[in-house]
Image (cartoon, rainbow, N blue to C red; front, side, top):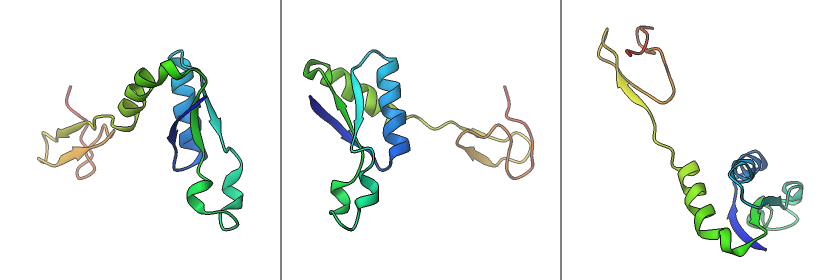
Length: 101
């Protein structure tokens, strides 16, 4: 077994492991319940981790995990008011106009 990554919280670790499993990797989450021991143990030792069963999957799994962590953000300029809208918004937050096609 091989540790692939530490996640900031259990929700992110579960999402990463699930995405890797969907892609055919042998990913699992370890240290699932250690968050409650932070303070008794050093906090950095309590983060959940994503592990791979098969070492040969590491390069491809790292590449996929990097893509998951660094997804490009969509950005567009509102044609009604000229506001720059970033993220997953489909309406302008300044004037409420819909995103152009």
